[in-house]
Length: 214
Image: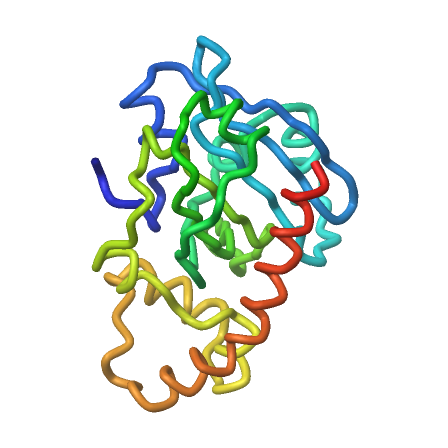
């Protein structure tokens, strides 16, 4: 199985290579959160995702968001408008699957891999924007419920902590596109990663609550 793509190639691209046409089934899309399934032609969910929206008010993003609200997969919608996509992965972990999600995945396994990423989008001559922070919970049939070395190497600090050490969104965007290399600032990078733990913990608690209440 192809490792999770963090530059331009979309998660839905990988799904379509495996299962054929993939569409989004939107469960919720309001001002704060989007819940959706990425489903194949048989109606089986291959990924359940929750997006926690960032604060943006640019008309360009609002227009794209309307298409996403009406059912367009996030990555495909941005790509349609000429944006490049990169993912700042901030956590990869294992979650216990509730019965409703095992039913939607059509699996018997009790655990799944989850990946939490900041969804970056950028056009030439424009500043990068974070559309939201997205957790993707993968069907165990698609991605095994095991964390591998590539998963670990993709994990970065959250943007908020990056910016506190003087690393801008533009720099994050560039570095993700250059093999996610931070070896020249190991100490400040490690400090920002540690400082990100509280934010990641809060995201995980919100995710757990949403899943349990569905």
